[in-house]
Amino acid sequence: MNRIRQNAAELLLVLLMAVIIIWYMMDAYAASSKVANLLLIVPLGVISLGFLVGIVIQILPGLLKAEKGDTPTESKKEEQTKENAKKIFLAMGLLALYVLIIPSVGFDIATFLFIGVMLFVQGERKWTWLIGFPLIFSFLVSQFFSAMIPYPMPMAIQQEWITGLI
Image (cartoon, rainbow, N blue to C red; front, side):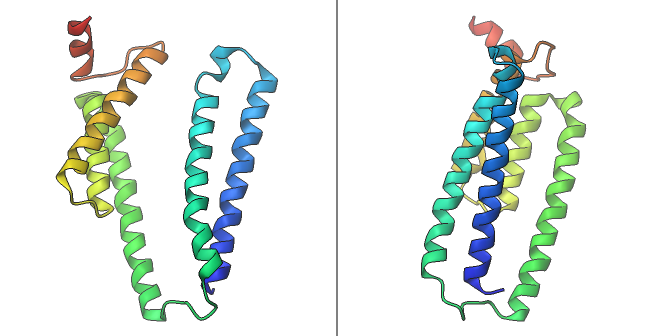
């Protein structure tokens, strides 16, 4: 598949995902317009749409300036496919490990470790990103879920730390 067709296919997939997200948010609103029903659906839908807009912004320049002969060689394609398969299986294993260690180490620490390792697997090597982003993200997500979910989450650090601040 040449580059133009690949970019067009990616764009169509992103647009399909956007349509599904919008439909789901509208369906949830039609079922019940109460804030409690829409508390997680609408913000996550809007965030997802924002990510999709970012993907479209990345795809469009490639679609506009790609040439028909711009295709990688077969050996490069095969090498990329093998590398992508390794990353996919590693990500699946890490996700399973993440879910299994949440009860023992806590949601906050498990999330921090999972995101840090996944960033490393995806090629990030700057320590500020490998430590800073997972730290901030795991803190915010843990606090959000602790506040929004009516049953207690297994936390290792944040539960005691936050109650000590209050």
